[in-house]
Image 1 (spheres, one colour):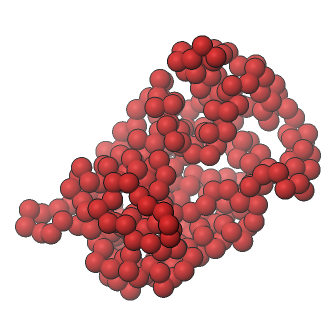
Image 2: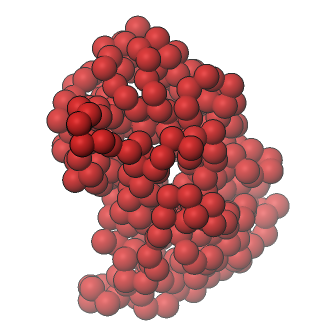
Image 3: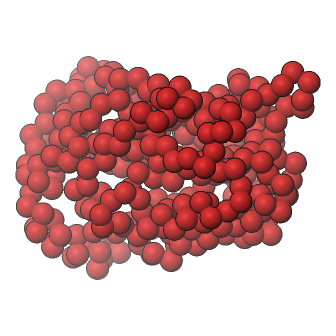
Length: 305
């Protein structure tokens, strides 16, 4: 969304702006010269936004005020953890549909949907399926849309999977399905925020496109765990530079996951979490590099920053 010198400053609505990615993104949008409005749940706030509007993507009527006067919507709101497939549908799928309808009604010019690389998993988890269905609503709309699919989010305040790995990195022995051989291309919070800002600034021709926003390096889960532990060691006397990885057969992992899912121990499905640990996620970032200058940096030394 290029700005002309004689046009008013574009107003951007960011949903799901309360987390670490949201904070990093709001700063970049402001520095890029945008006015930023954040949609938050009642009782919450978003540091760095010019305006904060309360609403809930599950309630279509609450979104009309948030989208009023907005030139572009950057839709990141969603849930990652739940034991209920219905929760994923209501927030991730129906919530996206509601945002699209409100955007259409208010004449929004641009709609960027933050999906997930997990939509490419086979089979898809309930979370991935909810994002996939949401993507179909976006693609079928008459909006000038773009879809981005981030990979595993790392860095200070990174995603829930990364936080789990940070906890595991404190242990002397870590059991992983198949020894953690699945390859990932983690993306740093700051790199993803920068990429989203660059996409928003790109010409309108960059619409009706799907981009993978991943990191530069492919790394196995086992090596990622060791890298996290090594950085812990370099900054703390309590760290351990090397992890002992125990390879656990998938069949045994599946059995344990099915048992855990019968117990009210976690806010998420262990079976779905296991599926994510087994899937490869190393998408190409070539189209994002070419179309809007996406340029993530290497992760060495940045795992916790």
